[in-house]
Image 1 (cartoon, rainbow, N blue to C red):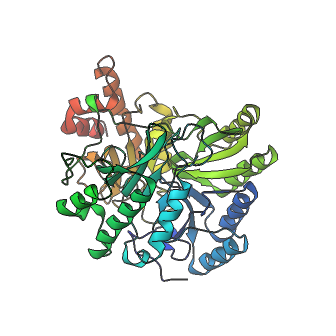
Image 2 (cartoon, rainbow, N blue to C red; image 1 turned 180 degrees about the vertical axis):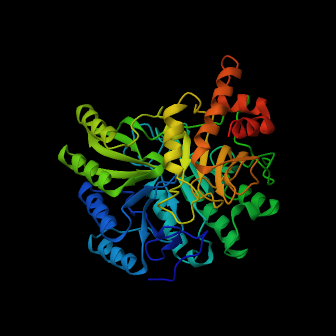
Image 3 (spheres, rainbow, N blue to C red; image 1 turned 90 degrees about the vertical axis):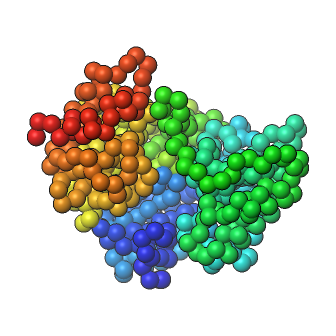
Length: 458
């Protein structure tokens, strides 16, 4: 077992990371999924060795929390005994329905495998822990929402398939370079990562120079662009007209596959007691689920079902507290474990989240992300959110259109934070124009006005 990884690194099985509630490990099965019996056994291991909390992250990784140094070693040994091959090195991510989605442009798994082999041949140790690659075959659950250093996306070119290569961002903000065949896409991706490696382990493709990006864009081009796209570093807000955040289909609900169906079920705030997950996986096994795949968006995809068995599993998941509808307001809230699960937390984040989701569901429309962070580390949502509640020595601070690290515009006691958000929700309800999103209405109200609503009537 390696020394505990520093914050900012990836808490792999061999390098657990210290958090407020003990050590955390992250598992990424090489196959992308697990047989139901293996997920059951992992849940049992989490109960034996951790604090009984399991998570699926925004990028679709499985996490087990609350480990000690000794129990982390025991857990690693049990995972090895189960025969679960876990991903190591630079993540090369494909969609959760890769290879089984009738709507995908191309199966990305072969290209992803070739990229992994090329990276492992000499680049892994030279790249930092947060460097990543996405190979997106398209389909019902694309990968546009995930940021990556290098993105390869399948596009149709008549009867053929080409791969669009872009760098440094998600499907909207990444800088496009060129569209080429699979061989050239692999070569350009590897060349980009070599350039990053030459800059050191803290570097990413966003640090490449305009000249380096231009050389990548012109290399192996099928049709050299007459004018190079604007690939200079720039801030992209990620918002569409009307201040609505562009979103993609959530991995929740029924998906038609090449054979049978898949049912997507999310974990509330990405977290669930291990016993609940064991019970759901047991039900899944009983009705014939062949595989359970991890999905970006803090979800699980249950593969190999009929519409009837999907309905049965969905009912069980609802009873166990999982998110089974894409309109569930909990999908709009990012909340870390908070107290009492995490020693760094200043208040009970999940209790506040549940209160807000129950009392103000109409406020949490698709334009809005509410981040509830027990401390300024912002583990659940590192980026900016329209509204962030963050705990510090002064109570529950409110940050408007920023991250948990920003200076709060106002405070309430932690136990009373949900009431402050309710006041904001009531104002939006009264001020919103017809057809206006919650985010656009909040923008009109302004940060100072929102902070005053939050502080009022303490």
